Length: 319
Image (cartoon, rainbow, N blue to C red; front, side, top):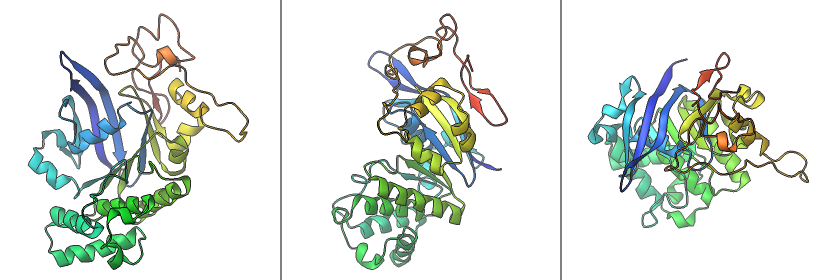
């Protein structure tokens, strides 16, 4: 299967007052065309920074020291900002984390959708309006002409997220980065939004990078899964294999922390907390929290992502 995006040995740092601190460590991530690839892990592990590196939308204090981001056989890290403006929206679109704050409250949804279409495609206002109606229909928002004249506060959270998805679809992007697309939505609306993304993916053949910490959601929709911990990919596999046969202690701990069928059963938690960016840890970064840690090995040697099966990789010295 053809690859649409390849991130190779990506190393990202943040500038501090006295020194720089590394946030991403040799991140390797490959997305195949037409699939949903989930990037999962706890908050602060580097998921969003990886995605923002692709779009050149990093904070001012962040910088990429080395690596490659190959999209359609071109290294995006060599692109200037003017070139990236042609990529964003047209070829790679973003569904941001919070639907409640992603739309401008001062403009109607129609103004914002039409402006987005015209900015990326150069069509006339009439053509943009026609396209806006089309994408509103794609995301199943009825009565498009009336809804385009409403302001964001007149929509529910689920409807706002549909509008944001419509903006991402408006220019026929090949890759959509969905950063926690169901945040702040209730469970029923979460399923509607994810079913909508899956339906659109199947109809258009686009690729989705799904950033999430919700393993239950990922198990239902992702074709492939990559797990991040403290700025590194620690496990990668096809979704079925990933949930059936996890090979990294962090993944095992995450799956064990999910609620089971017995509501009275006490939930298992992962001891401790993820390391902060300025904390220096020798060996495996997960070893202070790991139930399988071996002194003199895990706290000394840093594991590398290694093939453990036909398409299953993990970074552990014990498994």
